[in-house]
Amino acid sequence: MKKIYAALFLMPAVLGLVSCSDDEWNSLGEGKVELTTSHRAFILNEGSMNQNNSSITYFDWSATGDSAAVDLYATQNGQKLGDTGNDIEVVDNNRVVVAINVSNYVALLDGYGIEKSRISFEKYKNLGQVRNVAVEGDTVYAVSYGGYISRISMKGNKLEYVDSLKVGDRPEDVVKNNGKLYVTLQGADYKDNRVAIVSNFKTINYAEVMQDPARLYADGDKIYVTGFGAYYDNPWGVLDTKTNTYTQIGNASSITLGNGVIYAANSATDWKTYAVSTTLFTYTIADGKENTSYFQNVPAAINSNTVYSVSYNKYNQHVYFITSDYVNDGIVYEFDEKGAFVRQFSAGGVNSHGICFLN
Image (cartoon, helix red, strand yellow):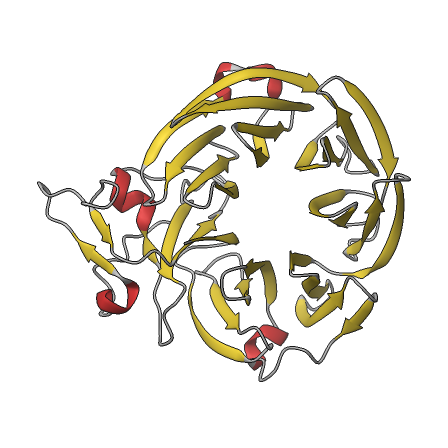
């Protein structure tokens, strides 16, 4: 998320992208880059903390050959995205909301990467730095490290801060499910083991999960939870929202959910040698079966690198694993709807948080 990639690659036709001159605007949604395909994928790259090198890169998810990520946000907006891009969520299939942690703001972008509005949390110092967001209808819910969840309204392309609610120490992620908000709480010492359950943006209950919970993924009356655990062994499990009881399933450092299946990676580090061992697998929700043979022809490089994120494309049922060495640009590995390896390419930035897909 720190370079302008449009001039570095030779495949604009494949990408569906054409650079515009300084005095020419994109006829499809404004901006300096012509996105001629509706098959757009945005990668949010966190960058390195305090390096101001977050970015949003772009690729055409329908392309079949080699691909290349283009630093879309910087090109379209004439400025860097900021420091530590922490979350990206789709709005109405053609816009996105991003949360930038250290720069401490939430922004709304159109489907071409043009920033339309932002809310700076620097105005609300007591809330702390923003972490992750969830979107439902015309409302954005944002959690921040000061212990709060905030409501932000979307009126057209305008974001407006509404109010905040204290939920607990160091909230990390949020999802909305069946009318309630679920928020992971890590605690000031990373020893909390709870999910806050918020009703009507007023009443708060709690459910116990693993120590130091991180991400949440909703599916029906179940919410899947990943966390770091007391021993940094990446436990994951399921929270039954009918009973608010948690059951551990196994170990996974990164997961995503699509079409009744959990797609997952578990990257384990030997802290004596710093060697990484990664296993890819699926978990079928209906029968609770894990399959470590689903992904085929897996490149050897994945097995010895950390998978930083997993993303699912609902439009073509493809799965994307992005690796990170925390220094160099990540590598995207794409698998098709049957688990066969398709291609790999640069994510265009460091520490890729994930991919959102537009159509």
